[in-house]
Length: 298
Image 1 (cartoon, rainbow, N blue to C red):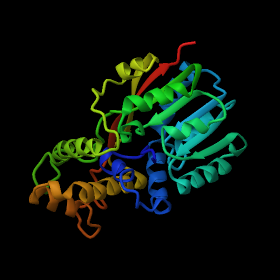
Image 2: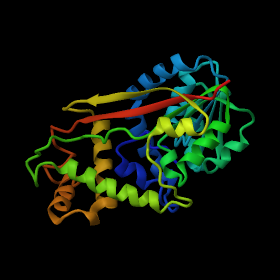
Image 3: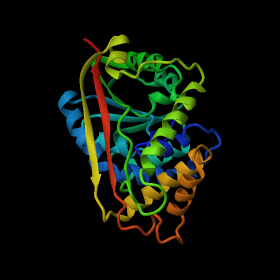
C-alpha cells in the first residue's frame, strides 16, 4: 500500500489498486512526486513536532519509497523510524534513502499489509503517520482502531486524508472546453466511490475523521492544512509530476470522459504537441493537504 505523497488522487490511486503494478518501475516516479511535496511535508512535520515531543518510535504506515519516513527521521532525531508498506521493492528504496541521508542506524522497515502488519512492531508507537493509506482499506474505522491499538499511551496518530485536489492549469487553457480540471474532479469522485465500494470488507462511513478517531477511543488534538504553491513558470520536477498526473488520469478515467475532454487530455500529455504540459508556460502546482491528529489517552 504505497503512500501517495505524491499528486492528486487520479494517479495516487492507480498505484494501489492493482496487484500487477511493477513497484520497482513505479518507485522513481513516486519519489519524484514526494520530493516535489517536501516543502509541504516539512511544514506538517514542524507542526507535528509541537504536538508530539521526543517520540521514541515513529511509524510511517504506508510509506512507499520512504521520502516522508526520512523527513520524520530528520524531524525527530531521537526517534527510531519504521517504514511500513506492502511493497518490498519500495521499502528497499526507503532503506537506500535512509543510508544516503545518514539515518540508517535508527531506520527500519516492515513489509506487509495494513493494518495487520502493525502487530509485528516490537513495541507501541509514539507517533503513527498515515498518509492516504486508510482510504485503501475497506473498513476505515477498523483500520483506525488497529492504528490506535498500536499507539503508546500519550501517543499521536497523524492522519492525512481528504485534502483538496491538485490544480496544474488555468481554467481556460486555449484548447478544449474551459474548466477541464473541475470536470476531471467530478469524474474522479465517482471513480473513487466505486473503488472504495469494491474493497474487501467495505464499510460505508461518513468521512468525519475527527469523529472516526473519537469513535475508536482517541482524543482529537487538531486539524490543519498545508499548502504547496509552485507558481508558473514552474520547475522541471513540477512539470514532470503534472505530466504523470494527467497521464494517469487519461489511463484511469479516460473511458468516463466525453470525447472532447479525452481529446484535450491526449493533447496535454503528447510531448510533440506545443499545447501540451511538456511545453506550456502556464503549468503550476497548487494544492493543500490536510492532517488530522489525535492522541491515545494516558
